[in-house]
Length: 411
Image (cartoon, rainbow, N blue to C red; front, side, top):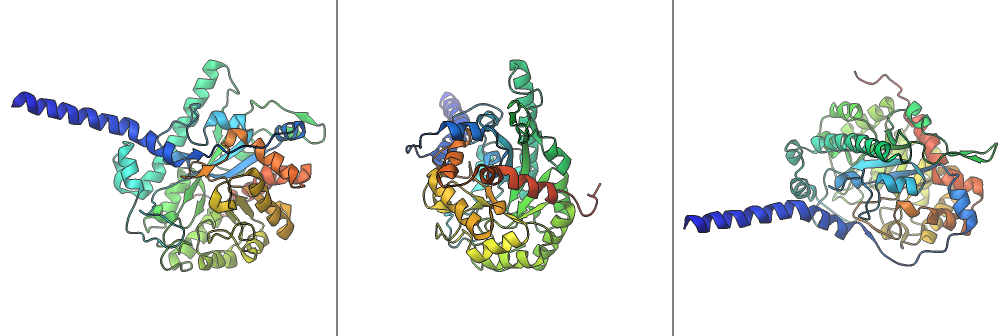
């Protein structure tokens, strides 16, 4: 009897180990996909131009998964090696802390959570099992560890640069990332120069109702945040929530403090009322970090022309995503079509990239093949200067300005 019990316990233990070792990776492979459809041929002009671009992607959810982004992989959409391969100068990494069961674009309550089982299955620190704030602080630690590991690995292998990936926390940090191209001389610099990563938040439910936690997140390195994700929270209504209301008093206080601290306000996933309230009170440029536009893809989370004009009036950015619900397709041509609409409506200076890579999305290409967007913009009639602006020049301008605090950060 005792031997049978020991045997059963061993089987259970082995099964548990297998689950924790294998299940998180299997889950991600099933949720972050490349659809495998054909990609366009890339011209010599596009390849040459792409290597001169300063590229910024405003949104990726890679930190949510157990995968080590310091290691080269064919899983998911983003890792540090693929950022170099795609010539991405700055990747904004978002912290996802809670999503509802049965997640959809129309109506979700805040009563359930998909992320808690994922956190447990990934064997994250115990403090993250019950605290949304701690989940974000863990993501910041995870990014820090990944940049350190990547730097050590490439130094040992004598690859890329001795500096690797730098975490951007202020305007000088962004400036320190080497520009790959000098437009006056036409010289293309060493593409092994350091690249950057910046922390963002997808829904400030991780404040757990306490505005003081914003300072903890700022101290951990977070420099951009959206107020809501897929459900209404204490700050505002979500486009996908039940009530879809505007900013609450707490939400207004948070927007004011974010702007004062030098944190970029992101309207992605906000309800129409929330977007309107933010645009009315904004003193600094706001961004829509990832999504699409109603004019080319009539999905509720995409921006109307009125909202696009409102973001542009703040000096902000519209980050265009690469998945079906953002552009109603996954082709690079559909991405370029949405970017073209923004350019034609309010000017190219408000166009940006916002992939939503690794956000449980299916896309046509990962970040190593970002030259596909360059080719699509050429095909859509963008000039070289317009492509430079849309692929990252605009984002650098807005981030540099927005990262400057209006008041000194808390010690």
